[in-house]
Image (tube, rainbow, N blue to C red; front, side, top):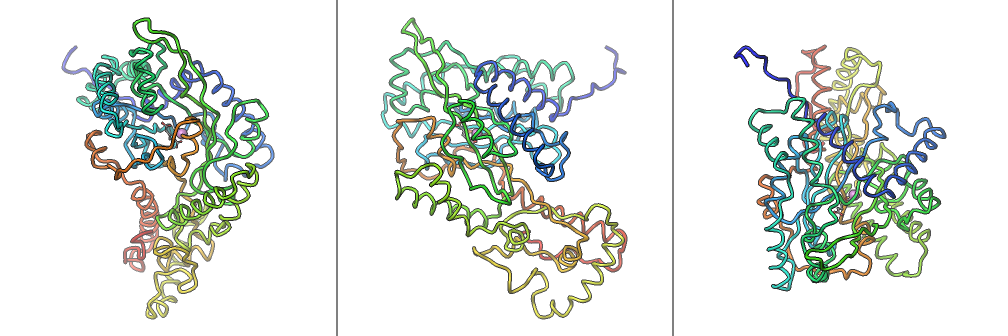
Length: 514
Ligand code: OOG
Ligand code: NI
């Protein structure tokens, strides 16, 4: 009104995201009641796990454990324009594209990124991320079917005018006011809702589904309905049994690594997609479409490139062994997986020293920077001889297990930190994997594509084309984990230097890869 009116306060993107996540959760429970039952089953298992094991949260307070909010969901879009607009909309709620996933290697004609919060604070504020796939029309062989898909996609508008207007306002002003943020969440939600009225005839649906069920799922609807949401479970094996006991159509096997003392990466399971009614265009009939499911996940240590290479190799080996025994029960297959993974170290110290996982370093609670600095200085002096022998930056130099080349690098820490860890003054806490394993967990895709042939695409990963469609590069997940570990080291070093500026002048060493 007057030019003295205060600048409106903006709502933090993390807050907008947490409201969006809550709205999305309500929407999906209403649309897929079986998902609501899954959420209830998981909540019971989580409560029972916590009753039986007070350490199940690794010391994280329950209020911060995010057991009652979803960690991810997934959507699929059809055009570059849709993907690029999603990027802008998701940016309003603090989601950034991280990682490139080429799913054509799993026989699925899409490639993807994960829009996710970056950084511990943002993940803590609201962990929801959206795995987002773009259909690769060029992988549809038949020219007429491809043209049908293109025409159909070109006609649709998946965003509400209000969502577009509020996104543009946020970009211009640098944020959204309270009332705009509220309106934004309401305006964005319909894009992800199920829309029974299909814009295509039943014949066209059949033609597109014949190219690939996923093609029909993307092309034949008025919008990119959310296809699953995924809460966190503290014990995925117990949750899987509870799903089966509750009569949910759970998958037979948990995807990802086997059960271990130290969880790594991501384990997931889901229930089979439900059939939902569809009304086809021009009175061409009623039908059903089966795409939407419920999933649960348990996350563990983020692996370095060396750790991931070992993981991929062992998973391949377990798959090959299981493929050679086609009649094996789910239990037998799980036992094979566990046996093969015996080669993957399963204690934190070995994982760290062998450079297989990423860690955040800090002082143990109660340890002062002063006490740590004194110990660090003493250690730096006493390791001078070792340094002269050329192994100053290596923990357990010469003896550390290095199952995969390059492993030792990510696990190497400077001598002063090595001494603090050995003395119990500093600690290394595992960094949790915050990304996805859709290709190594292709079973989730497959379980919802029963009867679909596994297509062999003769294509290269097309990250550059994906980023062009997105209108931005995707962040490299490994670089994010490496930076988090590196930042923790730099922070710790700075804290020690602040209390003993003369003794610890040098920059932290041995931190190139970790
Ligand atoms: C996405 C599948 C990827 C996961 O958990 O790996 C995913 C999709 O089915 O569209 O959500
Ligand atoms: Ni998922």
